[in-house]
Amino acid sequence: MDNQIYMCIDLKTFFASCECVHRGLDPFDTNLVVADPTRGNGAICLAISPKMKNQGIHNRCRIFEIPENINYITAIPKMRMYMEYAATIYEIYLKYISKEDIHVYSIDESFINLTPYLSLYQKTSYELAKRIKEDVLKETGITATVGLGTNMYLAKIAMDIIAKHSDSQIAFLDQKKYRSELWHHKPLTDFWQIGRGIEKRLAKHGIHDMYDIAHCPEEILYKDFGINARYLIDHAWGIEPTTMEDIHGYVPISKSISNSQVLFEDYEYKDAYLVLKEMVEINVLTLTSKHLVTNLISLRIGYSKDQAPPTGGSRTINQTTNAYSILLQEFCDLFKATTRKDVPIRTLAISFGNIKEEKFEQYDLFTDYDKIEEEKNIQNSILEIKSKYGKNAILRGMNFCEKATTKKRNTLIGGHNAY
Image 1: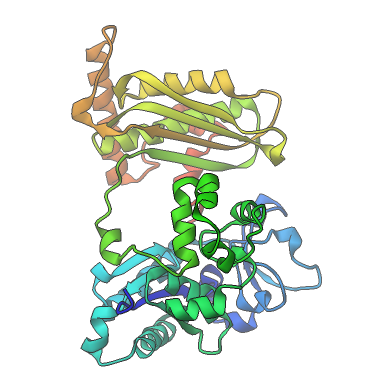
Image 2: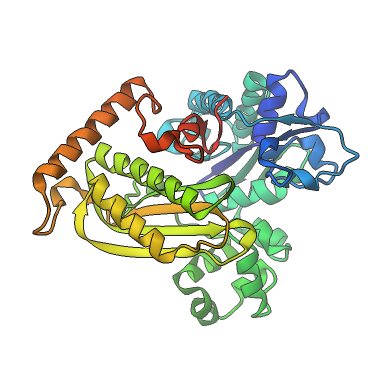
């Protein structure tokens, strides 16, 4: 794998940079925060400009955490604009690299296999990365950070830990360099896929850096982390067997369809019940559009300010279906059986599991098949209207209730304003 060269490119404080560029401002000389103040002082800042980071303010902070003596611009999230910038940048990548050698990891971060292109362009990996990076800046005004590595993990770590602190904003790692420079790097949470929870569990074994993980008896790690110990061990040695071909060829073994939302304010039981019914309809329409059915439902309710532990659960139902009436009733029963009435609700998440093709649809002996067929025709008609005229072209009466969220959320992207 040492003859492979991967690139990981991150668009620096992407949302904030888009807002600055759109306003004709320099992100490195402007105090700007991307956040929705209508959600209160506790609203999370989706991004802050590099200048604010240089003043010691952490990305993803909350509005109230910004020092009062700092004057800044507040930009309401405009997700459609950010997506347009991301699409433009992806087109720049395609000027140099085939789409088969690009993996878009998130809206602001991508992995690129540079290996086939070094001889084509007669450039080193550093030179090619620098050219792509400079092209992005020239065409969009967005600054990027680049990591290069002999596998995707090392490219990601080179970007996250080294490049962001270098003058060129480009860094390279192979296994030898990784072990010599980062085996004793702390904290462990700087490394990809190691959060505070994993860090604490490792600390119980006296493990505080990647060297400790690499030299810990494997049976100890497997006992605590199960099969996920393999990732920890491989990454501690700088090993990552996954290739670009593996990613593009991956087919999930099982499928599910999920839907979750953080409510704009605390909701009472009856109002959250209304939102649940809206969410079930959205998921059912997704099933219908893809000609899929399910026999497993899951529900998770989160309460305001952690006033109570989350509730919910999963339930296998007797039918394998995509009928709204059946799935709605099952979710309503599960909600009533598990949800607390005495604590404000702030988050809801639902999921359909055991997803199968519609040919595996199955009902019990008491099912009214004519009613199910009529219901499916209605669902297909709703989909056709929404597809042609927009998501809000046809709505149920419940969507117009004061606490309903579907009508508003249909105008959002990623839970935030589109414009």
